[in-house]
Image 1 (cartoon, rainbow, N blue to C red):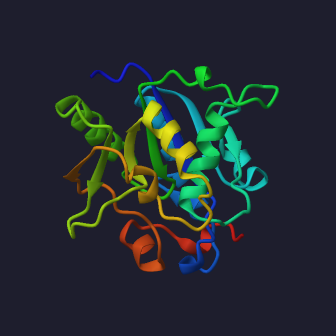
Image 2: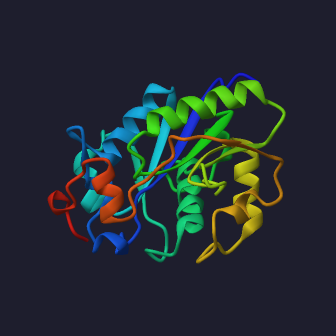
Image 3: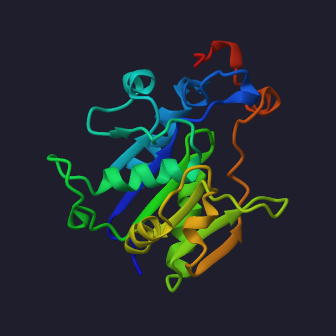
Length: 213
């Protein structure tokens, strides 16, 4: 399968508790916020519909006008709930109706907002999809073997069905959305993210320059 069209759901609304409440999405790396880098990377990869899940009042100033923004309900109810809200927004018509025909993309990228090397991650994902097109989802694992569910790709049709079938996603991990899918896992070394001040220091990111929730 060649990925004709891409969508992307970017999770950007966590508490950032291990960073003292500093918004990870707005930390700056090489002159850009991590969120801006992520959106630019998915656009460069060809994603034509992008949903950011997080507080619009906080994040809207760094996003292009055509990027969709939504918040999971309740706020801070976990990444699976955030993805569910993002997927619902992907298929929401202007009048608020859920219209799955709006989302005709082959693949949806599910990404955290805090990976400085997200561009490399996306390129590896797309290459892997081309090499292993028979799967429904593609999930990288880091050098320690930990699966990175917020750096993955899923066939859009299967993702829509999984979100619907999962029901209440509050407090659930992302893996519940992929539990029934045929998943291909592979090692990637570009999924490192920024969860702690030590992580930020690894990338030369100044936490004190960020914006606190």
